[in-house]
Image (tube, rainbow, N blue to C red; front, side):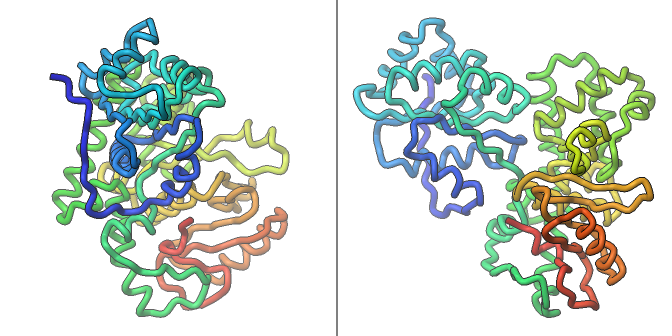
Amino acid sequence: MVVLFVYYTFTMVIERGVMRQIDAFLNTQEAIVLTGMRRTGKTTLLRYYYERLQTDNKIFVDFENILNRKYFQETNYEAIRKHLEFLGLDFSRNAFVFIDEIQFVSNLPSVVKYLIDHYRVKFFLTGSASFYLKGLFAESLAGRKVLFEIFPLTFREFLAFKGKRFQLPEDPFPISDEIYETLMPLYDEYMYYGGFPGVVLNSSVKEKKKALEDILTSYFQFEVMQFSDFRKNDSLRDLILLLMQSIGSKIDILRLSRDIGISRHTVHDYLAFLEGTYLISTIKPFSRGRGTEIRKSPKVYFCDSGLINHFARLDEGHIFENTVYQNLRTMGNLHYYQRKSGVEIDFILNRETAYEVKLSADINDLRRLRALAKDLGLKGFYLVSKKKSKQQSEGVLYGFMVDS
């Protein structure tokens, strides 16, 4: 028996920031596509929207079930339509199809395009392999989809998952000792164990560590083993471990090639795959001349601070920097800036606002950042501190305040 219909009862829905963006497209014709790193909550969101939809003309299909894929692997798309009618979908009125893990069926984009163009079908789709999705969907479903990237939780979402109803302070200063001392133990947990929902919801350290190991194992089993054609998976693993040790550093292709024993071309291919499947992200240097940004080396960050803390055991400063990055990335495009003298800005958001990350805010760091931001013509600047600052100064934020 093929199980296609899935019914879930949600006693409580924990809102995520991306849901407001998705809601704007619920009544449009475009297919809604959720993609991102594995275990970030895509399936949970899909199930939520399935339950929320007030109609009986809907089906939920899980492509991890091999039998379910067969309904969509016909070359005759009208035959696929008849399969869906057999399963209870009425094409004479608005129909809704929810499909989880779409990367398992290679011709799915063409099927979706056909049914959107010829019938009143609204699709909700998830897929974990962005490397696959971006290339295939960009061409096949141009103008017929909206794609939402699902990341590990921001700190604000983390608090919601922990059942904390705090109203995070928005003013740069002052922050009382009481507020700081209440939030910092939670921020430390978020920083050291990350924002994957399954990790956050586990109560013990042992369970959190096991969940982090399962996430990386799952990544290798599905993204690497099933959806890549790489022959040297050990080399890819070694590259991941080296990159974990290089958080916030510029990528040195020649050094990586030499240390792992693979060609520079292969290193480039591996990096593209790791970024395309959301394990890592790279940010380019900021320059008023855009051509300079292309020529210079990007810096690397990981999707989640919990992974790098568990597998690489980095110092607190690098883990904090990656955690700040995780929250800034949801707010727009990021660059870094560095002069030949070594003076730098960790992040420039949307080419307008500078963020420099320090474990402890120093008034001299703030002065340097202010002068550099002014010299670059930026609209604003913030020094992001983890430790309580003695200077309650405008321009100083704490890590828990960096959120969209």
